[in-house]
Image (cartoon, rainbow, N blue to C red; front, side, top):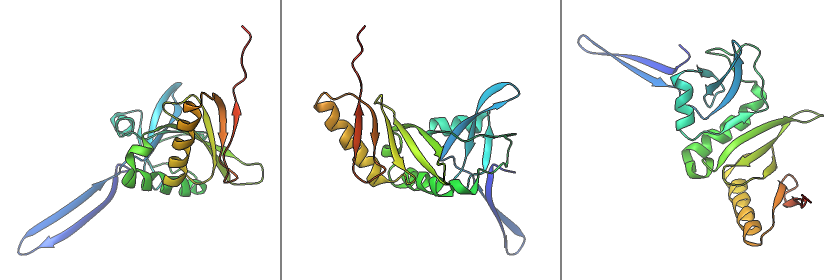
Length: 181
């Protein structure tokens, strides 16, 4: 049962059993093609897929988890695991969900982009800004707060940016080019 994270059975004397079931909780979701349709896939902090196109996936949407893009499934199904290389990202998402849910809700999408020499970097898309933000491989509260601060500063200065880059520790941005229309 992929929807169950853990179950504990204990005996209570004289003649009772106590069963404790802990359901999986979505940290985010992805979109995948199943039978020719694009459906949401919910996964937990361990990378276990526990909802494919059904109500469980809707829970992830309602819980404010971002879309994770850039990962591909050959045959997504209940119990499928995401690659272990994404364990750090899943741990980061779980920590943000528990400690800073409001910050996590500022993200609409987190794109996983493989590096040519191994590993990955993340590109995040804030929900209320038309800009992509490159952040390296760690997604944490400090980076998100810095990102939101910089977005506010750019907006207050009237600067429209296509992309902000935090990968080197210092933020840089590419300004949108004016169109001659």
